[in-house]
Structure formats: C-alpha cells, structure tokens
Image (cartoon, one colour):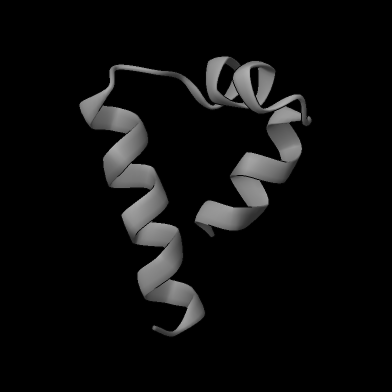
Length: 40
C-alpha cells in the first residue's frame, strides 16, 4: 500500500468508529497532530 491509501484507510476506520483525531490519539498515547499527519 502506498502512503495515500494508508492515510485514507486510517481516516475511514477512525470515522467508522466515530472518533475524532484527538480521541484516537488519546487511545494510542500519541498526539492528535501525529494522527493528522498520518491521514494526509
């Protein structure tokens, strides 16, 4: 998978779970900026 597909996949999964980037980041113990970077 290329980076664009991975980012889109992460965003889709997060949205299916009805999580914000900040909520996902908190669950993973990382910053919301990291999640944002992954998705773009």
